[in-house]
Image (cartoon, rainbow, N blue to C red; front, side, top):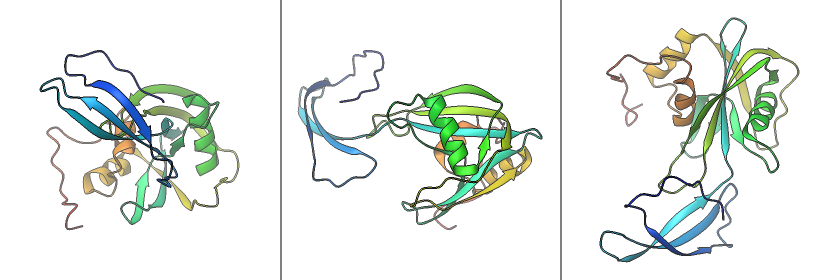
Length: 201
């Protein structure tokens, strides 16, 4: 069982047991049910956790500081999204190695310089993993994409203004891509008032 540990806090629930649903048929996750005790009232609850390996997202900038962006169909929302390159950290890899591999596989680009931008919790309510953000600078095309059979990805270069426009118009709203890009670009004015409603797009 893999857990991302935080600081011990008085609100932490006591973990009593875990069971796995081996018949869940999940591709990217393992389904785990944790039995826990609520510290406020001592009541027992079962809570769902989807275990996963860590993920990576890459902000890749070429010599002209254009960001290498990708578009791909996302099954959850049912349409093609604009986002940064990224993917899963494979067994035996660290996040830097995974970032280099994913950037090349999805775009055909390699980078001269790499800087770690930190990590975020994709959805700590039900996920146990981290998403690591990397900045790749001086990127250059070194080959063709190496896509898996289940992938179909297009690549485009966007300058900072184009990235900001895509964010502020609502074209780019992938949370992990936004999190990574926000560590490199000033994406929106403060306070951030978006001019789109996702319910009516």
